[in-house]
Amino acid sequence: MASIPNESVRGGLEVRDKALLAKKLTEAAAKGLCFLSAAFCVVITLGIVFVLGTESLTFFQKVPAAEFFSGIKWLPTQGEFGILPLVIGTLLITFGSGLVSIPLGLLVAVYLAEYAPQKVRRIIKPALELLAGIPSVVFGYFALNLISPLIQTVHPGASPLNAASGAIVVGIMTLPLVASLCEDAISAVPKSLREGAYGIGATKTEVTLGIVVPAALSGIIAAFILALSRAIGETMAVTIAAGATPRLTLNPGDEIQTMTAYIVNTSKGDLSRGSIEYQSVFAVGITLFVLTLGMNILANIFVRKYRRVY
Image 1 (spheres, one colour):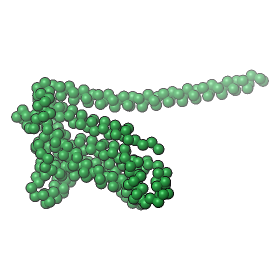
Image 2: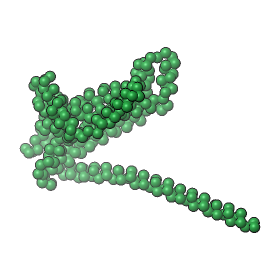
Image 3: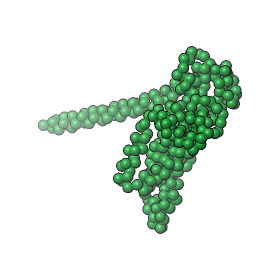
Image 4: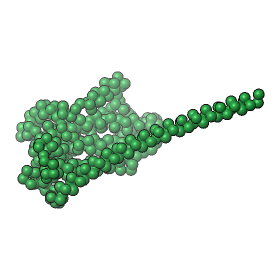
């Protein structure tokens, strides 16, 4: 009779041990799967860098790097490989789009996080999500058929395809990104800071501008930089709206060409593998990669330096 309880206890321990072992195996499998996913992302990134670097190295063996980065003419068919016109065109679109998306996105974020009633949020949030889901080629033709004619009406000397049109449409495209990330940063500010400010008699505007926005500044600036990084890599909308003429100009009314637009236009043609035009695509690509990487590193540095923990 005494052995029955012992066997019951022993059986219960075995069941518990099996359950613990199953739980450990499940946790190990989940951890391994997450690690493999992260490793896969790293491998893909390294693969992209390897391909860009290999082809670019061959290109720079034919075209000196100093000539490539300081030249002011980009005429691949004539052997002119000065990337400055493409870089200036890309920066015109990038910072021009920032003039549209950054102030509007921040104002939308402040309104949604601090002022908007729930009914209004239910309308604006889905509208922003819908705007973010529209294909870039649609934005390109929107700029071509609406924004460019409006710009020509205001500035008759502007080209039908111009940098201003491309910058405005890219700013509209990146607006949801700025608004969403800024709203997240503002909403993350603890309510205790707001309540403390209200307790000493501050108004809603004073609390928003003097307490909430400065407290969320690191996240807001990171959103700005990420939006600019997104604008650097935009392709189809810029190709359609801004044109395909590499020109060293700061006039937003001129037709320009960005680095991404050059890659698209060149890749559409019949390129023989190993030709200098083919390799120039990779040289432009690695330049674009370095610019985007630099923007993201800048965002991470800023967030880490100015992040506030509450």
